[in-house]
Length: 253
Image (cartoon, rainbow, N blue to C red; front, side, top):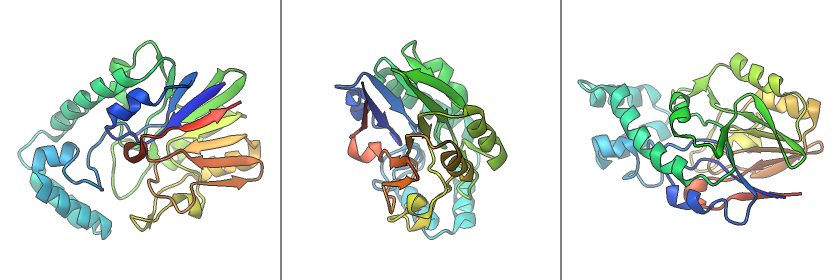
């Protein structure tokens, strides 16, 4: 059995259409939407609406952790516009292309920049969406936990630590623990380019230590200090920033 795993697709529909080649199934760990590309400020919903110069400004403020100034810039740009309607229309255009690129079968969960309420409208019969749920694939049990934890960035699908922990608890023992964000381990949550610690989950770390799955697979941190490490018997793997690499992680058994 060969399963390909991707995360942080961020608009890379061309790569996604090829991600399942040679595999029996595809797993996607979220962040399909491209709101703003920190490597190329001309790409994404934000520059499409407000131009590259404003994208440059907001990236600089966020990188400097001047979040209140970044929010103030955002408020001034959005003034007089229907923010929710504009974002949803842009996300719908991206989702139509991205979900059409999923092979059959695909198992997917949400990232912190996704809009989960739209997924049922775009996920076809070959795509199974899971969140706080388990599925068996060729004799191995995979558990899925979607979304991110609350941060000053205030991305669309951030939830409380308590709600997130409840989803992790609902999985019980699994062979492969699949999540968008990593367990709360410094080497796994530190982004070497952004030069900051992203939010990881203590509940995921506790589940790894308690239930000892074979693998913990995740994304979210685009340039991590460590892409993989062991916690006891569990191999923890950041499956990569698919938007930049177009390379899936291969899991075989």
